[in-house]
Amino acid sequence: MTEIEVVVAAELDAECEWLAVAGVLPAGLIARNREVAEAALRPWTPAFIHGDLQITHVFTEADEVTGIIDWSEAAQGDPLFDLAILTLGHEDRLADVLAGYGTGVDLDVIRAWWSLRSLTAIHWLVDHGFDPSAPGCEIDVLKARM
Image 1 (tube, rainbow, N blue to C red):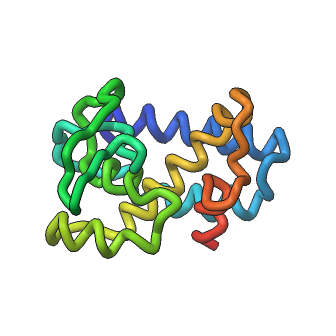
Image 2: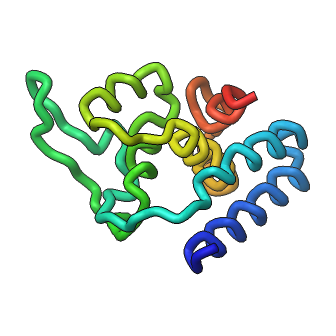
């Protein structure tokens, strides 16, 4: 494992433990998504990524991207992470995004990033007054992996 994979795996383990101890999610749901998330912990070629490429950060006009905002989390990373965040909670749109992206995308890795991101975000969301169980949000994303 690379250094970054070790750091991400440690964060994932800590968040999964918190989810279980706090009783936020059933143990089976945590375990299944932890297993799915493993596929994201693999070697990848670093690329410059947005780091938080969600639909609210992309502006379009007449089917053309006209701008992308909030580059505060931009860094070297796995390009499939950006694709996963862009489609998080919108699995039905993944084929459309990939049609414009091109070939060579491992769908298991996209799904792994969905699980990893959801498992690691719930604690922060709860602590800051957001509801990860709202329709289409992180808990729904995790349930879809069952």
